[in-house]
Length: 338
Image (cartoon, rainbow, N blue to C red; front, side, top):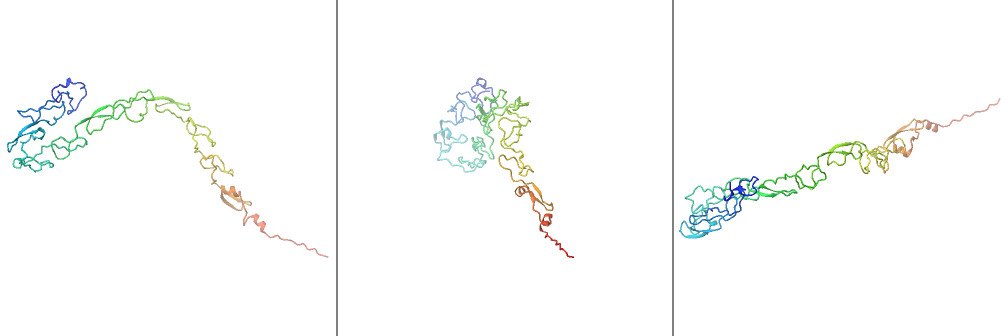
């Protein structure tokens, strides 16, 4: 197999160990030298570009042509000559305005209405392909264009900056190399190259002791602070003991245990969450109050009792009240004479 111009075998070219696409054959760097379509028996035109893939660029030379109608000879650039039809000068030219079978282009040929009724379009499509970067170079057609087959070299978005050849419109692949950054541990790196700020954690298994020195267990390398089920137990400013797992440093200031303070009556514990150093809220427990004689009862909040005392005043029907309101009776003793 040779290079695109056919002058050099691929085996003679350097660095051809990797596979390549059909339209991306390695080139030799020499002049192409292919015969261009505009060549005639008396005048040969060749491609002067470097060895390349795909069709040759348009010819930059000119040649003498003769008008099909008036037989006048003129020199024209090869790019201006339609090789699929006979040349007709501007004075003799009568363009056909019939729409071609593609539905997009007009015929435009000289006096073809009687000679060609099918009007098959032989122009290139030139629609923008879905990739957004290239035009369709297929013969003019109806319907959607095929996927772009061109390739390009893209730089991977990772630290190593490797360049790969990908098909146009395809998603740039991820780098398959191992991450080459300096890591905190000496374990073997298992993740691939990336462009993230931090590397993924190390999942190598190691033996570590908890922060309190109570127990040793097998954990992942990235787990540097190991806790155990032993309670901290350090005294808090409120009087409680820290109930978090054993830890280093200062305990949390916010205590969520029940308050230890009793109400002013000394009968109930504060039911609120620890609120040190603030005062306890009003006690919501209730008392059954009685008068001195026990005849009268009433349920009252503990906070009311704290302000008014635990004894009710006797009322109607109470023994103490009856004695205080009953009128006094006086007995008179009279002396008799004989």
